[in-house]
Image (cartoon, rainbow, N blue to C red):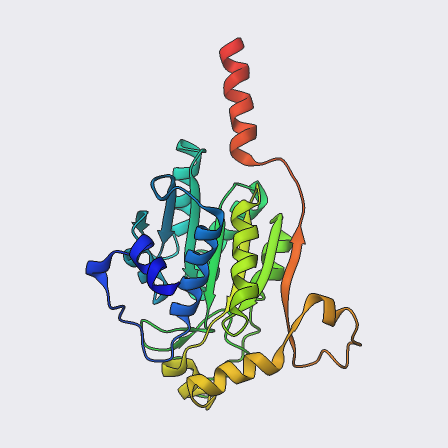
Length: 272
């Protein structure tokens, strides 16, 4: 199945990919492509937009209409595409630093407006491409090249941030539970409105090494042990949930979508 997906959706001349051994980006990219394949989307009517960072390279590997944009601006470019061509399916692939630091305002306002974009966050808790600086999602106390004595900031919860900003579809996934994460992405793409799937990624080269997390296999085992579903979390006490990460669909609701509302204004002006 994987080879069929590569033949169907990837730019063969851009392969093999250049991510580090053990990096979770390949798993997440497979989840994205599998979700697209399950939905039978038209590749000529599907646009993949990325910003800057390790995960942003994913757009270059995919044989869709793609746009590799500047740092933090992937959602801004994606918004322009969707406003101009609302019939297109627009998917943003972004890292945690790209989407929640310099791109943070674009994230919250896209969620607030409920524009029909799907944002897939490759959340590895660090800036991997540029040397291992700590990011807005680096846990307090963890290390990075710019936090040699430990990070003193509180990390963003991107899913909670998006929910608070008005996103109508919010989900949390991880690399280990790939089948479930694929379904979360698939449902997010099918959702009419702003969708975000925050996925716990694996970066053994920078985050893992600097924080003594062991090998990529060790990091995957940790996800297996520490991730719990929304359904299971609802059965546990607050004490039992300490140290656990809740994965699954956190929000799925309806609200007027931006481009559809904008079209109503256009139609009304034409009638006048």
